[in-house]
Image (cartoon, rainbow over all chains, first blue to last red; front, side):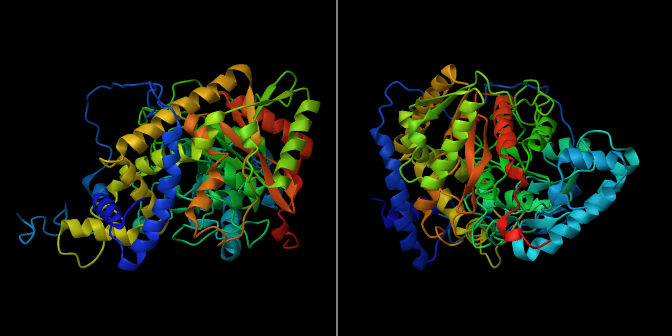
Length: 99
Length: 485
């Protein structure tokens, strides 16, 4: 069983928030899905190596050289707020939250 | 000229003979898409510059087989100067400043980008209903879904808007909509096609593939987009064959394995009936068909949803409202900016997957879910590879049912996830797999799934081609479009 508190904790980790009325249906749905996923515990995986990626090479090396593919203007084209050719964001240090 | 009846080869011939110019073909394609748009909603963005792009191809000459051929592009593949949204509000205004490698390759071959096709948001879904831009509809029955997540690409091809379209397939997102729309669709081997410039969903599973009415058209396109790319270190250095030139419908001596677990209890009897008929046809063509077992298949959906969601939660952390995409208003601090932009920008299904993934990767759950799923994946890959030691191909239904009604499953995520049970195995094992039309069930198309050995796309194309030439399904016009001409 997944609890409401657990869902709210996971939401914090995921940088998401939910309206109060959304949370209960989310808890219900995720509980069912995680319940389905829990069937995995019935498979004996003693001594089995996990498969995390599918590439047939482990490491790829390339020459360490700088290649300029985009201009600063291009890089900033999709930025929602730009000031003086820099990305503008809200205050990073929030004094009230600063412990 | 009616594009619905054309193939890449027939269009190529007309272009070479100057019966039509690439510019006219592109203009007609765009006009046609726009005329259909209200009804089908297959495209998110039409390429208004298509005719202009095609004019350059006319000037340079019709050289390769794709020169001047308009192709639909799933809107999770970035295209320089053409809006790319992944069907999400969070990318509603995203204008890429570079093109995906597959787009560079198509452009080098002279293909024309007809526009960006609709999909489930971030390719997460089996019905195109999670798109921020509304669902596309199935050309066989407008009250039904076109499948997902490449539903727009599939419906565009089935409706004859384009002869071929690119899709992506993470858990069946090319094969399931191909089956629902009565067309051919192939997901190549993991690593066959570069993923550079493809908006990431689950990096160990995603692969770009092709959809078309005819097998030979997908063969032509896949040869163009496949191959190594220095931008994607998971892309294979293996040589790319000319799949089209090597097409053969000779099935003599081909060994086909049919996993008994593919005969899932929930599978519609008409689906099984059509698939059985296809298998009988292969026997008559000289192939052997034998039953095998994949005991771990029953856990495939569980493995998939743990791993795909975990990878998605990681890949989707980059959407924070800072450098591109939707940015929430009235925020007090940077944390607010991240949380509000993501919470307002992502749809419910995407949030559900991010939550599932974040949970599976969290401290208390990592071993029991993420690591465990990755271990079960290893066992499953071994089972698939063992079968393919003795057999050339694995076959079964592509989907458990024909296209379902719009709205039928959208509120039941678990029922929706079970749609993918037959297509997920090929993704978990990284194998090439296709869906080819097998027949009709109550007027709706049914697909046969063909899975091959790693990098044996040619075997998959050949088997699909053999069935296509047997049933000539491509001659059928989608029911809901009949009488419109």
